[in-house]
Length: 174
Length: 107
Image (cartoon, rainbow over all chains, first blue to last red):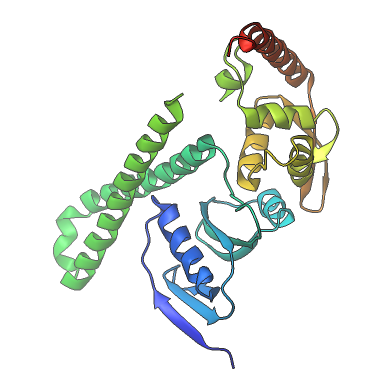
């Protein structure tokens, strides 16, 4: 029986490189990612040899067959795919393979995300306003949960918006 | 993107340039990555995600066309509009090269 460990890790889609670097570090000290569960926050690792693995956190909804096929052709292994979020890994020797070799693609990824967050925020806020007069029928814990979820969406929107502005100004330089 | 790719003066990105070059022959996404890596002797290794995104945009802009689908792969070829753009780009690169030669000796 191989030694395994499970880590809870919360991440933001606005900063994919943070999660990617963490997973790459784990591989470099011999912890190979084998499973991601619980809407993407429960990471299960298996102990093995230290190795060089490149990770990529992508967002694509829906992810079509051509996208999945092209990435697999190029050697990427899909380890997590849920509600538009995909975690890919690729072991390598020599130069590190990257999923995206241009800034434009990353900007477009963020724009797809902002659209989704925007729609979620608008529908949620509309619903909240429409239900304002019935507020008293909702139990408090449910209300708190609702507020927490809405806050997460708003924070994600703001973070992604900022990250994208940075990328855009980077793309303009030279 | 349309503006960027089909405008008369704006240079296209190196990624777009090499994808268009590759599609003078029929190729699928991964075939493009391999061809460009070979052609540039390993200097350019296009990211698979970048290639996927660029192909969809180019198809939308009418620069390339999917001519067949096998399993999960789409096969593409450059269109007339794509060739026109490539011609402009090659003329621009030639001009840049001539200018470079003029000053090269003084470097």
